[in-house]
Image (cartoon, rainbow, N blue to C red):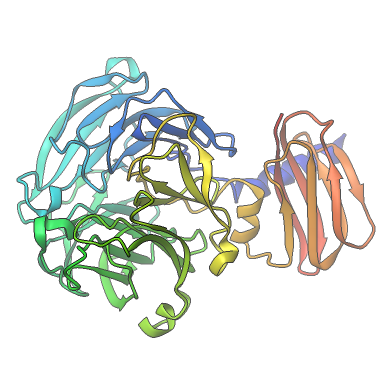
Length: 476
């Protein structure tokens, strides 16, 4: 019994370094009352949301992954699905590309909602709104709203990442009509109203209807890179650009622009969990022709220059404008997979192995069924996780390229492949009790745990680079 307790303790300590202590993004509400619950790591469709958001949406959870509130930038709903009494924010009809919820550092239950400006044309500007979750018996309310941060014309893009001190938070946006990034620091005293300004990269050339003020800006999970994508129009080749930058998360400075080979009508963006790939998708909305297609594509950004990175561009999927809907937001889920919004569908796409190069990333167009609800352009915008639940993504995160374990989650059968072989395999339940062991050298193994109860199990494998432990989720 002493040995079992000791092993269980070791397993818990090991797994905690890979499973997200952060759970603020474990529930998503987006599209037309669509939602996803990631709390078991196995995705569960939610159909009880009130959100109707053609584009950007944001949801925030507490430290245990329980829903607090969500918004489409127009309205703020509490966890019961009712609009907060002071929760009418901006009049965008949910058409802002991105909106984000940021917790106030070192101050529990206080949150900022950051909203932007419609296609560089309206008078909304960059604003913040404050939610106090101590009110209304823990259901919360908006205590301050429509606070102007800057009067200059900005794009619809907004993203956030942690300061290198691990506590404070940066959020970033871009002015429209120039090359100016605005980066704001959020700490325990609030939002610093004087942004760090970086004049870097191509200038956004205004176009018809301000369409190219739409799109996404994303930070890499490690906070060291930022990518920017804008939604140009078909008859203006100067209205698009896609660019990758370095980001200093100590100073808030954006630098070292790398222009990428974009597809016209760019919109969604996401880095891979290991920060080595950049994914993008298009929404070709204005002045395109029947020969055009909407696409999902990948770059390997391990190189250090525009030509090297652009040469790695791989088209993962395309849909002709005459027969399909546009793609929207891309977002890394808590399980380390990337989700791809496909407008007006009961499904969203899934990039199952986003750290892998090219088509090995395994993009599945109808990867997740929304339970009858409909997606639009947006998903859930939040600070990227640094660690992920689920074995497949943990394997990729620690770069064990010689070992694979699948499917995970599983209903019973586990397949193990070790390219260079392994000397032993052992599986333990959550109490640290041994339920399976094979001490023989092998390359492949199929293990049946169908008779075990649903829950979390741990697989200990000895390979050439040492001993490694993986989490397995057993489903009904």
